[in-house]
Image 1 (cartoon, one colour):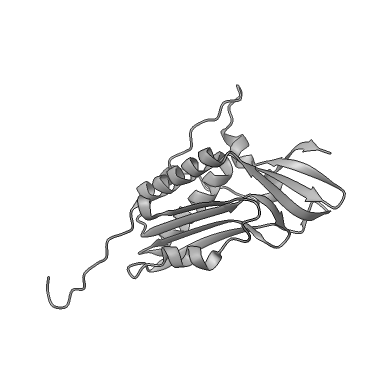
Image 2 (cartoon, rainbow, N blue to C red):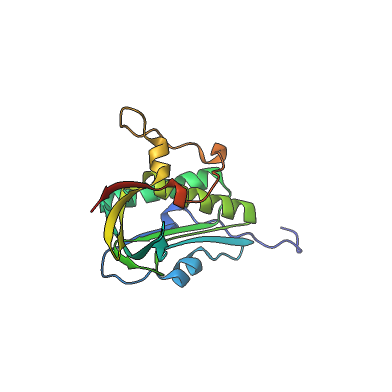
Length: 193
């Protein structure tokens, strides 16, 4: 190595990626811990996504969201999503966390962090991870209003469901089409009480 060259640290491996599902009663997501986990001296960018409970939907006041999951399968799928993101992008470190149980308005329910040498890889990986979480991880959401509640099904999941009810495989991260529009128009009411 020439005297003016600095050694480059190796990127974290998938075993070092952080996948966390917090059971009900575990408290809030520790955003600073996830960002610190992906921090890397060789990274020029850290991209994050924080999904929060909004206080209204289609004119109704949202009190909270309630999440349920098939825990073991959800953890396996989250780890697989991070592997897919790693395969498609030049990344340093990754973290994904999701809360279960009750998440009041204003609090975070899901968090994704990705670090990379260049911002495009970090940002694209972050978007890929959250889109895949919504489309393929067995976590279900009930939106609770001050006047009722509704189970929600993500449009990303519906876009992948075939006419016979089976789920199509996920698109390759590098060829994934950009989605237009906001998330609100993509929600479907499943069961209203």
